[in-house]
Image (cartoon, rainbow, N blue to C red; front, side, top):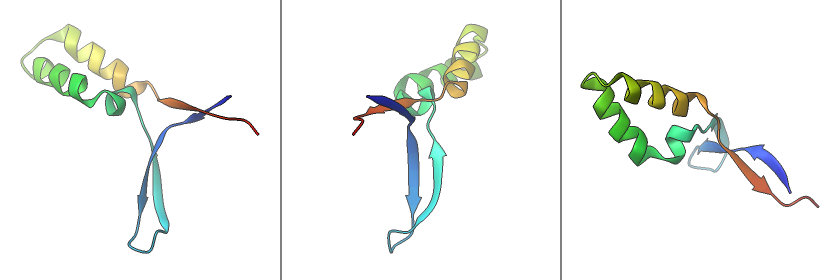
Length: 66
């Protein structure tokens, strides 16, 4: 198995790829990221640091090697 970056692919109505956006840990665990963002806005420094770490950490997915 090999790792590849997980991405969000944006396509037009005809299926042509417009853009691929790398996903972060915050995208993968959006519910937790949202809760951390709420706490960070309320002044929780630890939550703000954890949210930043999640946003800076890229996601990878495993794919079979042929």
